[in-house]
Image 1 (tube, rainbow, N blue to C red):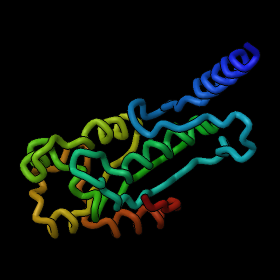
Image 2: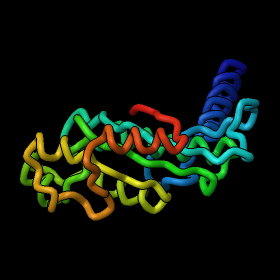
Image 3: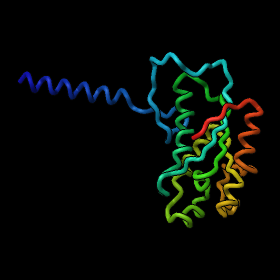
Image 4: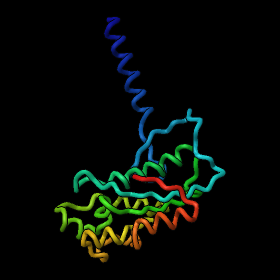
Length: 178
């Protein structure tokens, strides 16, 4: 009987801890879930205006999966907010290129190319609602023979990823790569 009681107590503890450790999505509701770390001592500085340009080059491992690079942007926004930062003090610009280029295609164009719906559309829309400026490299589009008319309306076409990153850097943006 004691063994049974110990086992039940252990299971209760494990289940309770598991629930307490659930992921949260304070900014991007459906993507980039993160864990709150209330005991963290290194947190975003609420007196700083964060300006970040993200070099997004990582696409998805399979056409029916969303871009890992875009997902990491959602995580970054959620982490900043959960850590005590304020996303209204944050300017984020994405320079999408390389393997992530196809993630910005309309559903029809994506489906024609890969045979499945574009899993990135909701993620891109949620990033846009969160205030992120999304740009795609025009060179990557042309190099992959992508019709610019098939790019999602939430995404701006840049001359190049290099143009976007260099312009942002000259304006004081930090550069991240995902």
